[in-house]
Length: 243
Image 1 (spheres, rainbow, N blue to C red):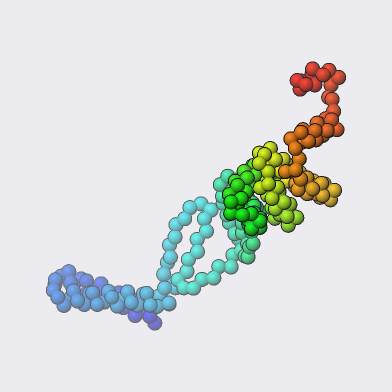
Image 2: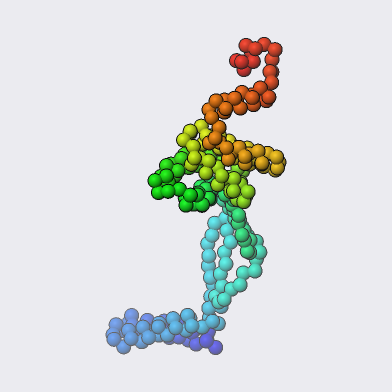
């Protein structure tokens, strides 16, 4: 019924426009405007008329268009994505994404662990301790980031406890070489952490780093080299030059 009324209104509007064209006067102008307003009201307030309208869309190749005169529920389960090189895409009705620990988060954990030590120092010692612990942090992070998957170790409670010990040892020593040694010990803990004997040895080594003299450290290095390095050639010159 509303469609019929709209058609009648439209025909009347056309007649009023012709009347206005032939007799440019106030009365046909007002009639044309009134009929036009009434037609618009009928179109945009009638669900029956809106359902009969043609909705036109244009789109590019492989695109998906949706249109309706009224409410619309899309039940198509196809989920289409496209991404550039090295991009990551995720789709799900409900999704929890775990992206692991990056260097930024690892540094945050490092600082969280360091907070446990700050009450152990006086105001005067805290500045020196922070400088040493920061130096150790930079050396450790560069090595952990270079080792594949090593940053994930920061989520391990036992590694975090060892990290606190290493920070305490770093704060207690003035030798930069000790920071490198502590970093190597933590890397070794990550690589061989499934072995309980290795874990115990690393934990004890971290505790006594600041107690080992330079001479003792050199001796340990020589001892390790003798027990671990084997000749690859009977010619000493060739072996030393690496050819």
